[in-house]
Length: 165
Image (tube, rainbow, N blue to C red; front, side):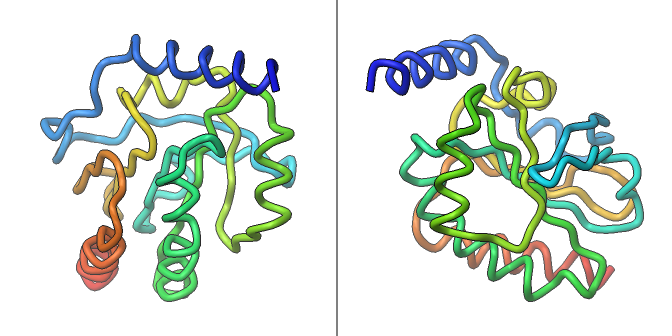
């Protein structure tokens, strides 16, 4: 329990020191990154150019993250054949909680590990969850901070619009 609490505090302090995920990033080129997936494969954002990409920053200690995960999986299943990629970026340094959670709540989209919070920092994530939706040209089109029931309907509309463009 102490390790979980210590990990939580470490991640929380690291995130608190980051610049806020800003709406003024809308229209700008999404910063490129490479992270390792849970399957061991390196995933580079630039290689997904041409697809609509949703990046969702999350952690297992985040209740709203856990609540939205099944909704994100439904959106992924709905649009994956239309050029849509969903990347779940877990920000925990210790992956044991993530692995246990994903065993209990499996998802079909790609899960990446950002235990060093380098990508979270690059994107200015200041709280969990945080979601960025990127168009086929690699530009940030939508930014969402937090999650409340019903947000998934907004995500669905935005993704639908972008895959239709």
